[in-house]
Structure formats: C-alpha cells, structure tokens
Image (cartoon, rainbow, N blue to C red; front, side):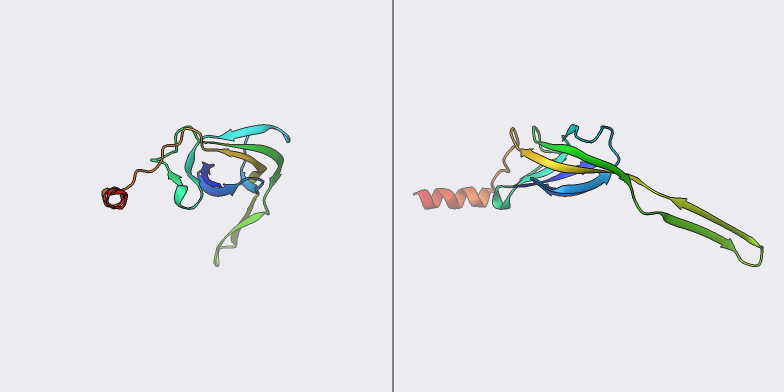
Length: 124
C-alpha cells in the first residue's frame, strides 16, 4: 500500500518504512508526526483518489534527523563594471521515516455506469 502526501508545497509517494527528506518541520528527532493532507491512498485498482484530499486518511511518521542541503551559490556579475556579488544558501530539511498508512474513512471511488451495467448483465 502506498500514499501520496502533500507537505512543504511538494508531493511525495510514500510506503511503510520509507525514509524521505522533506522541507523543515518542527519537532525533535524521535518525535511522531502525522500527515493529514493525503492526495491518494491504496494499491493498484483499490486506490482511493481524494478531491482534493482523502477524508480520514492519515500517514504516521517519525522524525529521524534535521539537516541542511548542499550549498547553492548565486553569483551575479556586471561585465566591465568591476561589480560582482556572491551569495550562498543552504536549505533546511527534515528526514522522516514513514511508520504507517491508515486509509480508514477513505471514500471508495464510484464505478462508472458502464461498469455497473456490465456487472448487472453478468449477474443475470
């Protein structure tokens, strides 16, 4: 089973025991957190797609560590002006381990009218 979660303005496809790097979250290492903005949950044909989120679905995770990404250099130069500027930036991030995906309360996707008609004909 997998889920697509939304955090930090990005979307991540996660499964149980995955370790992912996301935008910085509050909390110390070892703290438990829950993601409630679940866009999709399930596996294969049993997947539930939210509109925009799946109601009642929760992904539990544990904060493993906090860190900073590699330095990104922003260099500006104006030619023939003896003018240049160098700036560096290191983005903060949080490493989390996905513990559990709970799809309780998620609404099942309705079958189309053609599929319902085909099922009725097969039953008769």
